[in-house]
Length: 214
Image (cartoon, rainbow, N blue to C red):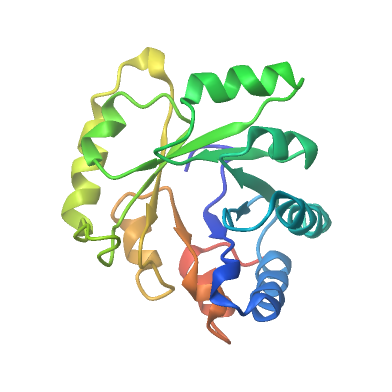
């Protein structure tokens, strides 16, 4: 695992309509995990910016209270306002270099992760981490990459030029507590997920599967 990067990225999803359940599970997760082992990613792009800011303020307070990280999807300005620890870039967002330059304008620096659907992209990526998807289940008409896709990504990363620095690999897309340990054993640095925090009772098994129980 690359130092100072979390083992788990827990992604918010207000569209599921079970926000209170998610927050309850999130508190259990953050409190039960070793400090600095979890990042909460504020996504919820459908929310008006004021509501997203309010949600982010609550998540910032919660993550700080448990010694965990807060990342923000796409909005560098929002990440700066929330004093977030990282920014995650979708395929339609600015480039990694642009994100870093914009952060400097605000007097901030972040960990930068980016969405990835092509395993071979790890050979040239400039982000601190790529979220490779979909790994375990098909998503948005894309077939699951599976362990074969993970192996291709690891092989591509092994070919990286030394000057590019390290790039963590996170498995995303249908990942659950049941396959998290196998993904780590296969070489992933961590996992990113949404649905498991809407499953009552899933948190203890997830913590154990990832080896991050406090």
